[in-house]
Length: 247
Image (tube, rainbow, N blue to C red; front, side, top):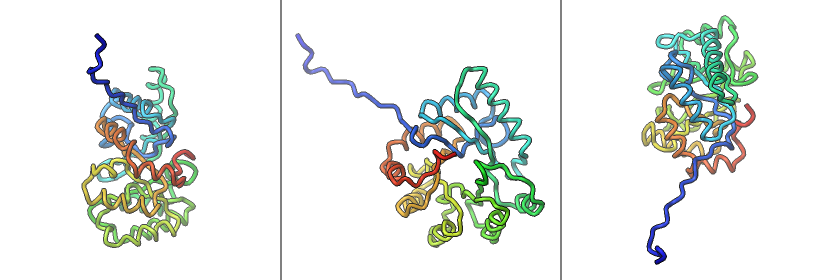
């Protein structure tokens, strides 16, 4: 007898983020910040990026002087070791390194001394501010960055929820030449409902220039996989405004 009543198994298509091309915000270098703790984990995370279709990753360790006093030399040494291990394991994916600079006294001093900064590409510098309260002079710091011919890329602006009642500031930042980067997990409520709401607003207003994973651990790979099918991410894709593929 033919099994006419047998349920057909659902076919689950793997998540595909290949259209982004490059992820430009992650923490893959082992042991230097709150991201990957060791090389084995880093390799697992790199393979996760591959499975999602990325062709390139630019990893961005924290430079937050009181907690993660990383330097360009530390970061370059770490990414070189990661590349070597990837080669040893036959993993063929391009990986670069920049930094996620926290705007603090150390960063201001770096600017004052005109020390070269690590960039995502050309003159693009990824910066973040406190998620609790805005530094009173952060606009002045961004302006100084621009005076030194850098373009500030503001990491996860949706997480600065103290700005949600002053949404005009995001348009002002864009108009002044800054670029904005969405954390993919924000669209899933990973950082809370307020962050999700602000992220949705910034998507609707077409203010984002980049989408990043901000990947720290394997649980973020699951978030990325879930986010891949979101209508708002499809809206960003269709807008043509994202610059990930140019990196």
